[in-house]
Structure formats: C-alpha cells, structure tokens
Image (cartoon, rainbow, N blue to C red; front, side):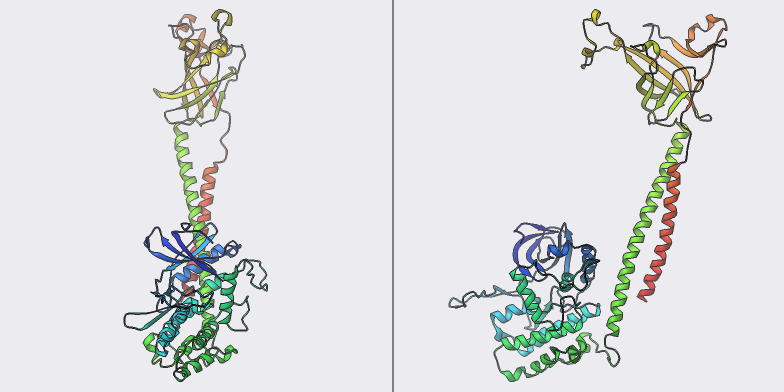
Length: 556
C-alpha cells in the first residue's frame, strides 16, 4: 500500500481505497496535463505481474486498445502510464450519491456501511428496495450496450461483478450503469514468454482483501472456467445472469413482478454455456420489456452457421493488425536511425574533407623528409589557432639531449602557420640561490627565464607536406635573428641566420626543408560508414513500404 502524497505517474495519491484481485485502488488527484486538479480512480497493477518479462510492451498495447473503448455503458480509461515498476490505469472519479446515516441505525457488528452509492453493490447494501424492475432494465440496457461495444473490439470483460458496475440515477430518474475495470482481468492473466502455459495462475501476492475479491469474481464466472482460460463473450453473459440472480436474492418485494427477470437470468446463467444466449445482442433481445434493439444501435446476427466465426475473425484481424503495427514501428525506427547516422557520417566526411583541403591533418605527425634534422611537427585541431607540438632545439636543451618534445600554440599569420614554443632556461642553483622547483609557483618566473622561438610553416596540399619557411629566435637578446633552412656544399641541411647569407658569398644557399605526413591516408571510414548506413536505411525503407501495404490489405 502506498501512502498519501505518493506520485503515481501524473497523479498524486489522496487516499487508499482497497486491494482487489487485479491490483490496488486509489483515489488520486491529477497534477499535470489536461486533467490537472481533477480526481481520478487509479488502479495499480500488482508488482509481481508488472515485473514479468515482456509485460511492459503487453501493458502499453492493451491500454492503447482500451483507450479506444467508449460509449454508453463503458467507464472509459482516461490515462495510463509506467513509472518504474508502477504500471497504472486512471479512470474518471465518480463521486456517487452520498448516504446519510440514520442516528438510530443499528448495524451488525463488523458491518461497514458505504458512505456513498457508486456501484451496484453499494446500492443493494444501502437500500435494496430502491431497485425496481424498471430501474434494473435501465441498468441492464446500459451494461449490454457497453458489452456489445467491448465484444465488437474482439475482447471480453471477464470480471463482471456488482463492485465493477457503477450506477446512478440521472435528473429524469432514469438509471445509468457503466462497466469499469475493463481489460484488467486480462492483464492479470499475463504470462511471460517461455512461461508454462499450463501453470495455474499464482495468487500468492494477494492479501486477504485481494483473495476475497478474487473469490467474489469467481462466483460470477462459469463454473468450468479455469484460471488459465482467456475470458470470452459467454463469460460476460453468464456473469450478467448471475448478477440478476444475486439481485433477486437481495431484493425484497412482490416475487411476481420479478418472474420474467428470473427466467431471463436462469437462461443467461446456464451451467452449460452452449444453452445460454449465443451473443450479448441475443441476451439484450431477451430482456423483459426491452423493445426494438435498433433504437440502441444493436443488431442481432443470424447465427445459423458457426456462432463464433465472426468473433474469431475479428480477433484474428486485430491480432494481425497489432503484430504488423509493432513490426512497422520497429522497421520505421531502424530506417530513421540508420538514415540519421548515415547523414551524420556523410556530413562529417564532407566537413573533414573541406577542412583537410585547407589545413594540415590534425594530430598527424609531419617528419623531416631529408632525415638530416631531428625535427617533427604536429598541429592540433583548429581553424585559426590550436595546440602545436615540435622539438626543442639542441642549444635550448637543458641536459644536452636531442629529440625532446616541445608543446606550444599555433595560429594563422599572413597565410603561414606560426608555431610558438618556449623552454625554461637552465639555472645555476648556486648563483641564483634558488632551486629549480622554486620557479614553479605562480609569478615566480619572468619572460626572460624562457627560451622562446617561432617556427613559420607553409602547407603544401599537393604534396601533403609542411614547408619550414623560417624560425625566429631570441638568442641574442634585442637582436632577433631569423633562421632559414640552408645547405653548404654537399654538407647536411642546417638552420642558418638569414642576415649572414650574403656574407657567405654563395657558399651557403637556401634549401627547402619539407615535412611529410608520417601516416599514409587509409580508408575513409566516415564516408564508408555513411554510405553503409544509408544503404541500410534504404533497405528498411523498402521493408516499411511493404509492411504499409500489408497493413492496408489487412484493414480491407
């Protein structure tokens, strides 16, 4: 039992009403949506059922069908939902006719008198004498109209009993009645896929109130119905007959005025269901004082052939339609998802192709093509700037080692890629009086504590290479030399100050220094996956069209 204030989907519990064979009942208030502020009668499916394998999909499918049931004699489903293990169904709240308790009322010990009349059971508990044959006819007409609509949908109620029949008298004094909790008995009989079909329904999760409710429902079901049987139309006809017999036992009045009702009830409640009324329309036709059924939009079919053929055909069409709809939804989802993924991969491939046309490959290493200099570069992703990786020049290395990595930044400048690096200068601990680690705190260092250099690179798309244009360094303080790639005679390449080239009188000449991608371009997986997903989407699209045609044919 859940306490007041607990949320069940879009409603909040006001009070607990009780527990029956199909779940717990609560009076709730809607907290959002179109019904905000209205009271609801909420049925909570037992957790032992809702947590079974496959129940969630079955629950949604059944509730979507039950939402379509409306009309005279049907108390419709207003909302349903799932909140963790809580599978709930909401109905409009029927306030009912209040009952005034006489001051001298002497109820027997243990007897609880209803505070209002909402159900047929309440009416018979409060004042059985109010139920006349004419009023009973009004109630039974409404109930037959409701069951006729329900049976046309290919299902049966299966749990018709006085507590599940809502009643009231309108302003004209005419009786109105509704079937409530339609479909809940079917839900309680759910079995998971792979379960034992011959296993009787377990009711160990029900408390004493739930067991009593189950036993009461069994009183109005055919004696030969088993717990594993799926209810059909004959169950509901039998239950209505049993309800009238129960009314005759409760009602005190002239027996002669109930004779016709007694005869009708005895035929409806036959132990041998084949001797009962063959359909709910025939049952309604036999009601005392009913008149023309066409006034209620009900037609009595000719059952000279097999009586259950049309109902069976309706059930088969409905099951096929649901199966096709479920398959169609699954194929549509796969088509949309593969189409979306394919489009995203193609878009990414297009964007990356445009980017790589104008920019070097991001996070790709470019190494010296001549192999004579220990230099390599890597540029991080960016359009106008980004991270850069290079190597510390030997003269800046604190320990004299070659090939140490340097981390910096790059930006676009005059059509070139300017890569800026810096390296902490080696310190003499004795002269400075400070240890190297003491320079790590914020503000402990100055710009002059670092070696700074800038490498300018040009991107050659035709060769997929980076060309070193120049290097700017701060070796001589205020004099900022510019180093370029040169070669002296047959000697190896080296970086040489640009201003000193004229003094070499042609012995040292500028030489191009290029850096090629270390990795060869392989398969464009984004393009491959993009076309692959689009191909899958087209296959699902054709399958979806085929299912749509099958759906149209099944409707016809």
